[in-house]
Length: 51
Image (cartoon, rainbow, N blue to C red):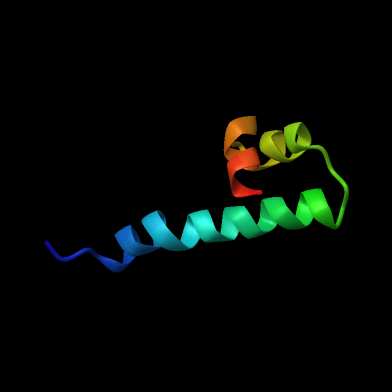
């Protein structure tokens, strides 16, 4: 089945953007994973996985 461009963005692009944003906030801005999770609307486990 062929995926629409929206599905591709949802499954591949958005997680990549979230991962990079989480990494920048934790490593460059020295934020705690809990704070990043709250800002991005993710669980702490997801932020930990991204980093």
